[in-house]
Length: 115
Image (cartoon, rainbow, N blue to C red; front, side, top):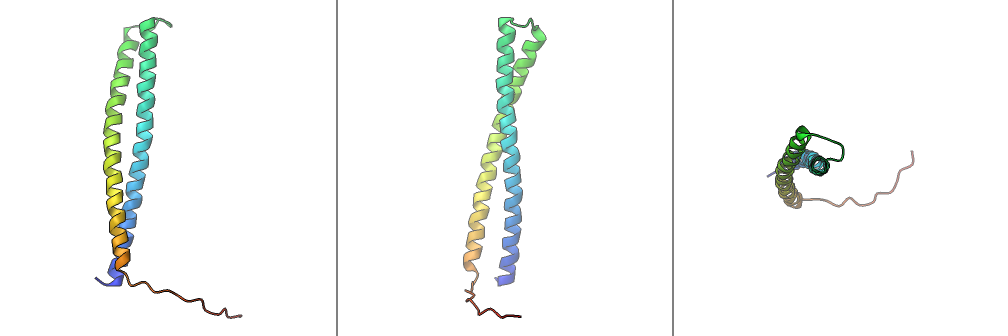
């Protein structure tokens, strides 16, 4: 493998890592929204059961749907986040391996030229 090919491959891997990082961040946002939905649905269900504000059966069913939807979304996004973080780790390991294969040269300090 030539040095140019390795450099191109490293650039491709870095672009993939950035894309995966964006996916991971989006998953984290959905996880937060899912937790908020679960909490909000639970509070609404509790308020409906206690009859504090006089909400009806529709609110109770809506709160149950909110809790269940939040749980499903949470589980899905947590598993996607784990897979994405695993893919990021594998890509970073491959990038490190490719970088170690390149024959890097140390550039010595050169005297400064005055113009």
